[in-house]
Length: 132
Image (cartoon, rainbow, N blue to C red; front, top):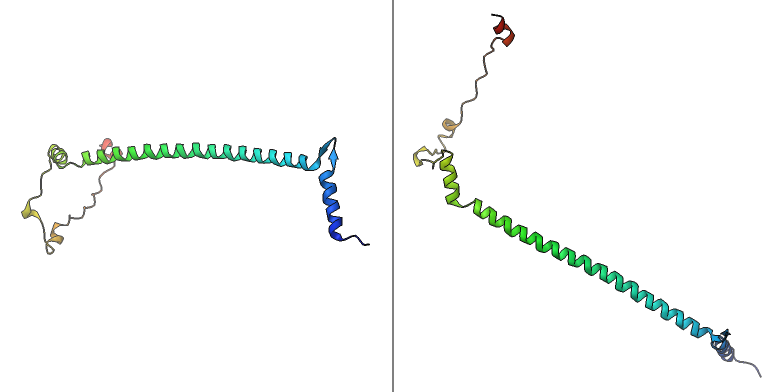
């Protein structure tokens, strides 16, 4: 009678499950180690999730603060751009509205252009003037 390969495999697996170290089977030791590894991996994942949650909360707080600053700046810009305020400032500076008759058309643009500055005439040097 010949032994089948299945019977040999069964005996190897049976020996693996029955193999003991100081009264404890190897399969139990491997199971305990695997459970310990799973517990540690869950702990590490939970700690990483807590760090990410803290980072998200900090970013959300920064976003709220930035939004509040934007609202304040928009309110300040609206206050500074009020027509009544600008009119009062222009009157204090001696400015007034442009007269309708002073506006130029396309043909008068060359006449409205400022005259080029004339070069300054050379004058005597300060040392020569003080010697006189």
